Structures are given as C-alpha cells and as structure tokens.
Length: 159
Image (tube, rainbow, N blue to C red; front, side, top):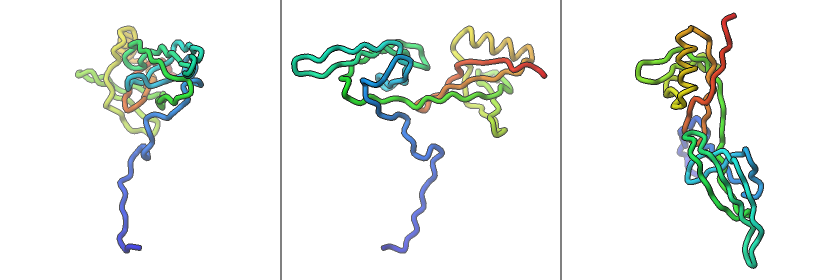
C-alpha cells in the first residue's frame, strides 16, 4: 500500500461510451446503428437465410441522422453492431448571431452558444421567420457520438 493520494480528472460524461453493442439480429426498423463510423437511423432491415456453413446475415439500409446520406451494411445476425446513444433535448432560442450560430437557453438557465443554424432549408426559413416575428421558439437538438444538430422547432407562443 502506498501513502500517495490519487487524484482523478472528472469528466462530464463520466467516461460513458458514445455507442453500445447490440446483436445485429435484434436491431429493427426505426432503430439506430453505426455504419462507417456515422450514427444512422435504420429504414430497412432484411435477413438472409444461413448458407451451407454460414451465418444468417442482416442487410441494413440506414440514413445518417446528421447528413441525411443513405448508408448500407451487411452483418452476420449473431454478431454485435455498435448502436449510438441518441439524445434529443429541447432548448429555448434566445438569439441568432451574424456568423450563423444560435444562442440557446438551457433548462438550468445557462446559455449554449456552440450550435450552428440548421442546413435544412425549410427548417432554417421557419427558424429565421419565427425569430424575426418575435415568436418564442423551442428548438429540438439531436446529439449522438459527439455531434449535435438542430432537428426541429416548435412555437410555444406568447402567453
């Protein structure tokens, strides 16, 4: 036994992994999966029969939740796939800056200033129009694997 004291740096996410393993055969449509290192939402799953010596294979067609790109993967159904931890959080919009960032109010009263305006044209137009009209907007922010993006908004109205 040593008399030294150990000091550990505390991490905000408590060392939590960005993904967790799940057997390929149990992943269903509308679930999430990591394909080519990208978090994706599964839009189609098909399972092939086992071959003479092989495993049944799952064919996944999925769409990247941030870029909207279509990705495909084929995995033996008994093997594990990475599944991303996907979180959706609502924030109130405070301001839109000149350089394309939004200022958001978190639940505990802090501000969050590190999110860019959405790339989706219709969402961007709704956000800018609503803000210029002075509406109280709540933005839904999706986060997975260290990335965040505005994915929706709703008007809570003036009461």
